[in-house]
Image 1 (cartoon, rainbow over the protein chains, first blue to last red):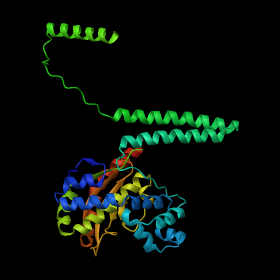
Image 2 (image 1 turned 90 degrees about the horizontal axis):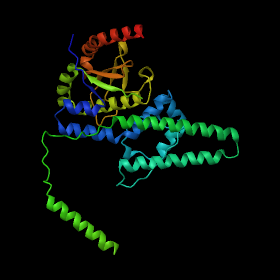
Image 3 (image 1 turned 180 degrees about the vertical axis):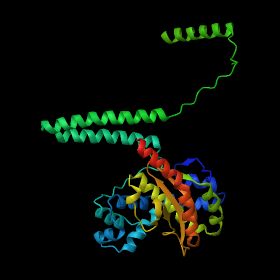
Image 4 (image 1 turned 120 degrees about the vertical axis):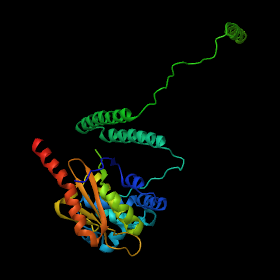
Length: 196
Length: 126
């Protein structure tokens, strides 16, 4: 029996860059995979609903060929109209967001945190006046708190902190008695001056 | 949720290098389709329910991913994989054109035989 290579990869690109030395090929593949993220999401949504391309074509009034074309398109070639028609047939809404090019991942985490807070506030305001719904919202908020905290804790555990490397000998600046006394005298003088 | 991982066979590695050299367009299209397949698995879709024009269902749960969606006129090609639900691993076993289909599937069946045994054993113990 053939000896199996045990290493596992998270994605196709990770696996291929290890096998292939052809940089042009690797770059072109990366461009294709990263440039078709929307099409891949659409394909997954259709499969999740157990629909074939032909069935979706019927729902959208598109031809099957058009559905296939959409599912293989680069993100930049898709039109909002096609996206909207495709998603509506799957009972999904297209959501578009805009963000500053300088936005970092940290900014996004912060944004989602505030957005979450706003949504929970909105939910709380909507429930006001109805005891049953108020109770439901209270329970949901508590549940969300536990789940989010647990999720964040898991992320926290995954973060690798760099351990401080300590050598056997540490050379520090010599502590000069004169200097230290002189400095403290200067500081006291400063304090005196500032108090005056 | 645990994400699906990929594991390649050394047979695939050897065959891919030659295939990529002779058919780069086909290789790229199949790998992109494999990525699409993996994206769908990570969305929680069971491999049994995952049907698409580029996925061909072969015996013993083996799947053949083809070159559909690639640029230009491409030769009929197959990337053979085996999705193992119990370990959430997609084994990438072989690659070739239609002429090698028989021998490729045979190689795949040999490769997955021990995996299937393990699956059965785990099924009995759990």
